[in-house]
Each structure stands twice: as C-alpha cells, then as structure tokens.
Image (cartoon, rainbow, N blue to C red; front, side, top):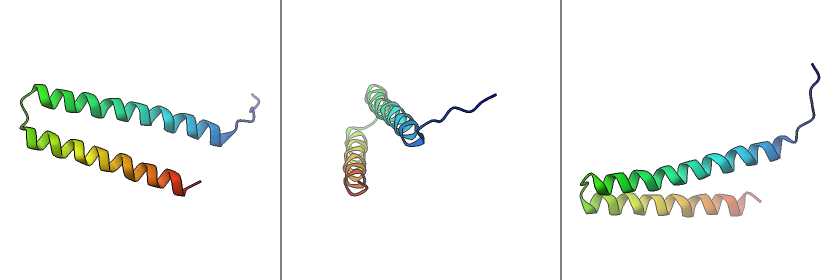
Length: 66
C-alpha cells in the first residue's frame, strides 16, 4: 500500500467547515424544537444571545488567527 501526499491544512479546513455547518444547523433546529415544545421565551432569548456571542467570538478568533 502506498501513501498519497495529502495537504493536511486543506483537509483540516474542510472537516472544520463541515462540522461548523452541522453545528450551526443543529443549533437552529434545537432552538426551533425548544420553541415548539413550549420552552419559555426568556430562555429561548438567552439561548439566542449566547449563540450570537459565540459567533462573534469565533469571528474574532478567526480574524486574529490569520
């Protein structure tokens, strides 16, 4: 068996992007499910706020890691 050279950074980026997409869609589905199941509005609002702050923090990390 021979090994093929693979650009690790592009593979890592692809995997990271894939899981970020999954995570984002999962968060939206989770919030929708919480809304439908009758979770109180203040709880959902706080969850949205936390998600927004997490996205802002991720963006800061991305901006400064370049």
